[in-house]
Length: 422
Ligand code: IMP
Image 1: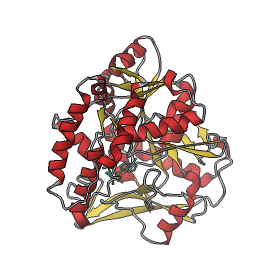
Image 2 (image 1 turned 90 degrees about the vertical axis):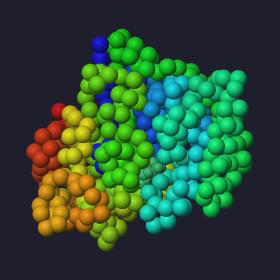
Image 3 (image 1 turned 180 degrees about the vertical axis):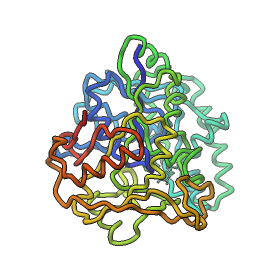
């Protein structure tokens, strides 16, 4: 019996998971998404063309790989149908390789409207949501009001849809928000028909049967550990468990069935949306990172906030996830920095700590360690031995601090710009 390996982000999302999953896919028989929805934007670049996936797992470009949308995912039929159309035009044969859990919840047009209305009402305190309806859909899931993918096969589906929509309309009346649900309904119901063309399954059986048959399954996380609903900087978080435990509930596999946990992080940090970010650089340094790293949201196009690597937060994420192997991405973005800084502790109320404070409103001052930059172009390097000594030192430091080996260093967006270490 094999185990499910898990790949997840250790920061605030956008760590480059799409590319790494794509690189790892040849080692796996199946890739499964376990949480989140179209708030994610997993970018994969090959043959110099960038592809962004929102709902469909990143293994879809490998023809023999099974791709599973697990029960923990929330699915928007409109976004899903758009993705299917783009991939079909690229001659990707989805119907053979994509399975969708009947237990995944559906994002209705009214969920998106509720998301927008709720954010608008929050004013300055807004979360900075991607406005994809994620929060309201998970609220309906836990509130036991939601509609699931399997429900689209029921003769009562339209009636149940209307019932939930009308409930949402009543809620929307509490806001001064002008909504127009009906204008999206046509596309939504067409999307539902597209979903019906796929294999709708109880994917927990499929996954566990694959494990019994010795197949290799990779669970692909979305967003990042610091956006986790329980352990992120609440309320500036997403609405699902983005940490490793989410793979168990979001796919129906037991904790015993978890194998390697790949934790992916950028050589620096970024965050989209509101919320604490202790090492943020609201200055030329941050601007330089943003421009060199092309740090603009794959889903919303918003500029990402940028800052130095935060070891306090990284170690916290490694602890929560039980990470067994680290993957560092975008090291090349730091190619032209003379000095590289890493936060090793925080000063909170004048006291030094290596814990994330509960209270997100208390000012946190990072304590930095400085490293000499490597000041050279590393994008063409494919061999670990050819890495500049300063970067090798940076890698050694992170491994020593975390106690976890860095298995892969990604030095550019292309599939080829990847150094796999022994
Ligand atoms: P929501 O999940 O769209 O409600 O957004 C909640 C918070 O998570 C916001 O700060 C978003 O910017 C952030 N977020 C959601 N999805 C992603 C992602 O895939 N990458 C990075 N940030 C995300």
